[in-house]
Amino acid sequence: MQTHFYDVAVMQVCEEARCPNVDDCWGGGKNEVATATIMILGDMCTRGCMFCSVKTSRSPPAPDSNEPVNTAMAVTDWGLDYVVLTSVDRDGSLLFYV
Image (cartoon, rainbow, N blue to C red; front, side, top):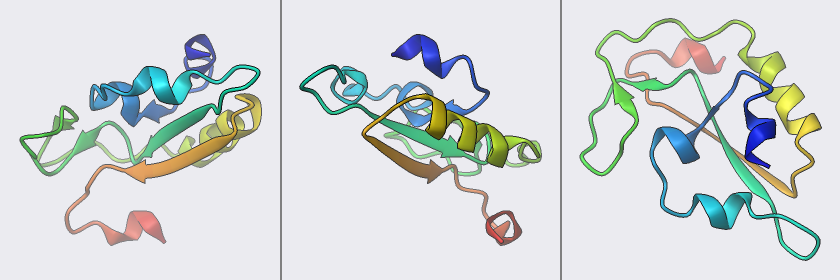
């Protein structure tokens, strides 16, 4: 399933944060449940949590204006059982969620 993730320009927290459970989520298959966690607002966080491997920047670039469409395409095309949406932290930037 991982090859499908690269067909659409979205970030997956599984890779960005180096999640150790990635194979459990992406497993899928006939009798398995396939899950992906899409990380919105880019791949740079304004915080630097010690437990997380997501890149950090005090002034990250603006979010990709095509991200909503790319996310919708990914959710539609990947054929997953579950999709989880999460985001990087953008301190002081609530307008991205409006």
